[in-house]
Length: 52
Image 1 (cartoon, one colour):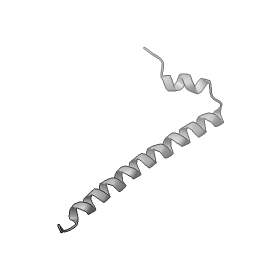
Image 2 (tube, rainbow, N blue to C red):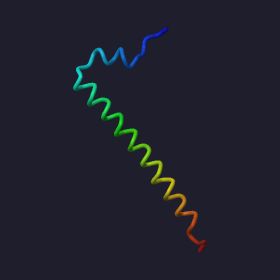
Image 3 (spheres, rainbow, N blue to C red):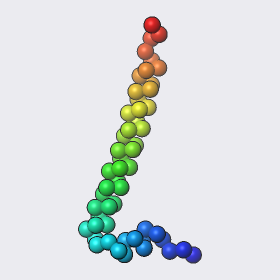
Image 4 (tube, rainbow, N blue to C red):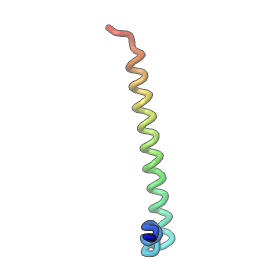
């Protein structure tokens, strides 16, 4: 089997670099989820507005 790619790249980074990389990925994921929630909420609000 192919080795885990993340594990291979982890070997070339220090512990601090890996922690920063992981933290950045987590915040990017949270930002993606929050933006999806906000856009969904905005679309729902637009659909609830009465027609002019």
